[in-house]
Length: 266
Image 1 (cartoon, helix red, strand yellow):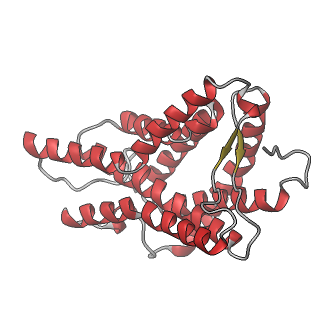
Image 2: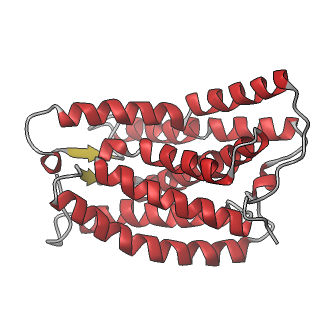
């Protein structure tokens, strides 16, 4: 049974110098990935706030064309972006390997595929329905931009790329913001409550470009994911849940935008 603090990190003795190295490593990983995204989202949000008009009259586009009118070049850029976004995950895998662990240490492996899929699907079903309602309410109250999950050309690779993008998002976020970050903060002596707060606020921060609703909604989702990780000891179900949520958002928007009245479009 997992402790309430979550999967137990290896009891590696750290002197002051080693703790500084571990702290700096964590900051560098975040600076190369989702920490930098958080700063970028903050700058974007300030720009939206200071722009004439309300937030809901502005749009935040998630998957846009990188080379309009040139589908093959566009596809190359899309695949390049997906691949390079996963480099921080490879770095985390390398860092865990150096300390005698691996991605299996945080439960990102294929040892329990069916339980991971079942748990992830259940989590996605619950969060997906409440998430849509929260987004519509936040936008209606003027706290959120209109989120455009995709604006890709209508070509054969559109939906495969959207699915790959969703999987990339889920792997990057859950491996780094949950598995890696909680492990490092535990090794640095952070309390379970402080680690939960740090992970949740970080997740909310890089969604701030969507508005206050995006920040708060993802922060709550982050807290739920941390609690589930501590219960299950695996990021696998969280990756599945996140991937299903993003696939539903990206592909669903592509299929429904302009065809249903309740879905806001730019």
